[in-house]
Image 1 (cartoon, one colour):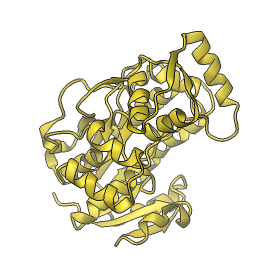
Image 2 (cartoon, rainbow, N blue to C red):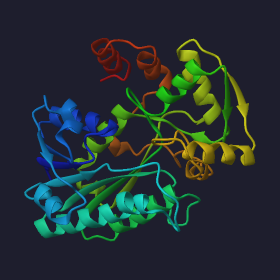
Image 3 (cartoon, rainbow, N blue to C red):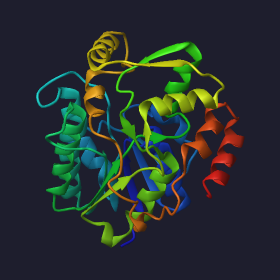
Image 4 (cartoon, rainbow, N blue to C red):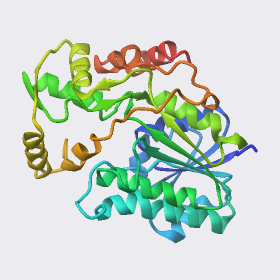
Length: 318
């Protein structure tokens, strides 16, 4: 079934910007919800509708999804206050919002719902993040809608909060004390994430499926930090912290103003390897996932936006 009108929730973020471009290239009619229009200023030059709406308000959410053929939810957070089984921020973003989205779709007759989650999502998982992601998935699966869930490893690409953060640390500090240095990840290129989503949007066989999204190679956290440093010509010394010191470091960072660079819950999440259980499903249409070696140096070294974009397309075979 063709889904022409697509309503995107969480579309003004990192993954959303790339997904909007991919949807527009397919000729889809796209609308993006944002609480403040300025947050989506980078999207306003595209032929889409940017609509100010509080998606946590059921009436505004229902009005936003009305007349859409499909809804895509990309909302996710990495930090929040502590709680059992998770704090209020995780509950709001990962569980309550999916429940409201399902209700809005059902009330407006929208049958197709795609939902972004994470590898390791599990109601019994070791962290608030993974537990709330798991409960959010259950809300989606228990609905009567035609749903598809994507479980992603960490995502890299321009303006990511992964390799760019590691490169910043390498530039600033000759020595980096690193907690969970041996935690495992399988980074996936943001362009591949967007491609996977658009490739199954209109695929009837994708209804009821859960797809893992991951790149071609597994890395430890320490290896990712070293890679980011090597890409910019920096080679800080990495000191692997024992668990006790790692948690002390994370607790200290939680007390700093703004969103913490690392939290105790992040450490708990890293107890579960963020790696795929097998190769990517063929219907995702990603024959050769892009590697960080081919893509990341282009943005970590500060190429211009146009040069960087053209290089991404060339190296990723797009």
